[in-house]
Image (tube, rainbow, N blue to C red; front, top):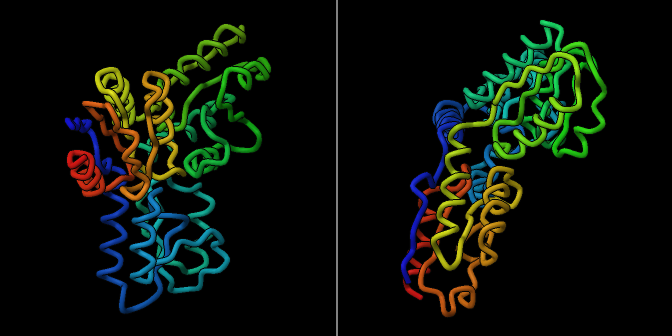
Amino acid sequence: MKVIISSNSGYCSGVKRAIKTLDNAINEYGSKGNIFTLGDIIHNPKVIQDYKKRGIFPIEDINKLKTGDNLVIRSHGVSPAVIRELKDKGVNVLDATCLFVLKVHGLAKDLNNRGYFIVLIGEKNHPEVIGIKGNISGENYKIVNCVNEAEKINSQKKIAIISQTTQTKENFILISKKIVEKIKDEVLVINTTCKAAQLRQNETAELAGKVDVMLIIGGKNSANTTYLAEISKNILHETYHIENAGDLNKEWFNGKKTAGICSGASTPQEDVNDIRRIIESI
């Protein structure tokens, strides 16, 4: 069977930075104290399990940390208030927030200071969205993730629209268009979707139109991987979102000649290569 892998597979730059930060912390502090990550360092169950075997565990409650503990902030980032609280507790903070996400943090803070009501397009419980929200004062914002939610936005003097970086460009445009049509006052639209994520989405759509079956590899809890699966499924019904080679079903390839593989930003390249070899042997 012929297998085609998307050219943008494996870790994105933000995930690479997070992994490197954690590995450096293990090398520097591994024998001197506890090392934790705030939530899963990346949305990949296999990678998290490997780190747990090395004694690195994710935590959700920073109150469990003690003075002198080492904490790696994942690529999704956190609000400035969380960073301050950690430092006040005497925790050694190693910030691996994606540099592009940090730019969105700064943008949200600047827009807030300039008096804009901010519409943040994204999943309200996603850690990246929670971190961005933390740069906005009071209730001067609304989080929406679909056109129906955008319908509920009331007119404001000034509105600025930004988004979770891993949002699809299509959803960003649909929601922004609805708000611009609905609101008569000033609306500032700033595209903060990640260009690297958009490139993966475009390649997924293109590849899904060329093959007989598509595999999207990545954690089921990964937003960017889920978006890839949705994009591919809309084009090719024979699309399967898997986390690892153990999820493969040989029956998917019966009568098929070509298979496409795309991966989420938190999927190691070696996982992609392993799955390719298995499919090619069918």
